Length: 263
Length: 362
Image 1 (spheres, one colour):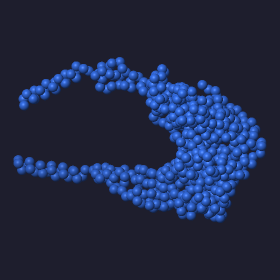
Image 2: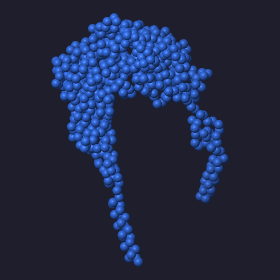
Image 3: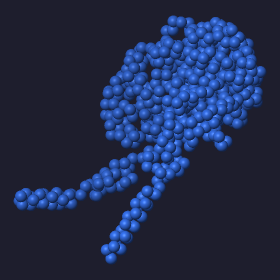
């Protein structure tokens, strides 16, 4: 009797201890995620990752200094920058399996407010991405008068209905040649033509294990240089479809570049 | 030891009994603002404070008005704010109310170039027209206040305006026959604190909405514009006239600051630059809305122009160069070079923004 009892106890002990080792705790098991669960034994796909986007602005590779008549464009004009405001839309990350994640529908950047230079993206579902894309300006579906009444770029970015309606894509302003001459490189859709364009940057991005910052740089001088040399004038260009098309072509070529660093 | 234990037991019993004998009295209705969860016996003290929400209707083409969460619009608050706005009680010698320098007949502005305070002292700027200011993101010509509540503090204590002391205002209002009741109804307070005074005034100011001009009726298809008005509308919205960059959208303002080439340096009034301490902001002033501009003369931050024709002529002849002049004043010294007809058309269009209801209502 005593022996049987001993055997049963032993079996019970072994059984329960085994059961403990097999107990499954669901959670995120990736140590590089923001919600890594040290107790988790089984990854349930809940891991979240953060990413920071930074917007920088350079002229000939140097960070933009406003209100300084120190720059020279491809048309050999001296110029300064007093105002730079623009919209990027449909900012997306792309994954290897062909899916994409929308990070921001419309982001407004103004040189006078450095808080607009950063976009913090939280709780992404994957650590690996193969590309990032965005649209400079607003495509024709979005670029509709009164579509963004409650955004901070309203009302200053309104584009009159007389010229097609919607919003400015960019307001780049300053003086050229002499301080008495102002230029206003205002881009946008005009006369029913959509001049927005999408840039798609292939990028091998792993955002686990670190704070990753992706930098999107605008090289301002390149708006005026490649392939079309654009001369600054005091004339408005909002209704000038030819100028808008030249600026779009330059914009697509090499105005934007993308790189990233891991802290 | 045993004695002590007995004593302890007695005292415990005593307190327990006492509690039972004296039930807590108070307001037992949990819908009242002074509901007491511990009260067992209702003593009739329940206070059922309630206000009626005041709804701001968003005009066509306007964003939703951003209203501070700690100062929701109520019928009681707006009505109290209007009374305060029109009551000279806020000034030191009881002679001047907000409305003295923000007269309804003049789009809630002052027809004089400079307003005169209670001590007969004049400032250096023209009183701003109070039109659709609930949509502004900063206040005063130099943007020195970020909310209407903050702005309302300033004229009361400014020595060249109402020259009062807020402590004096508080004691005057608290000993007044009507105000304590009105503040109680609007904010459920027993002591009138200056913060509630500016909250009420701000609520009233948010109701000063103009969106029923001839131009609005034209957009709604209720009326037609004349050929001259339509011509002006087109110039306004072209880069030839280039009015729309600062006075764009249905709001006719951009909520930003500009130097529109009024003066050469050195500037006598630094405007935004004095607030930000940034030289690149010198001589920049807040864009006013052009709605009801016909009634808000004189024009510019210092009221230097008395007619719309003079304003148009300023832009037409080009403006003065200075370091901070806006790049959108693209043809400095040359100007827009509009014909006389175009200038008349532009003024005709500006007058379609006149909303007579706004200056006569209430």
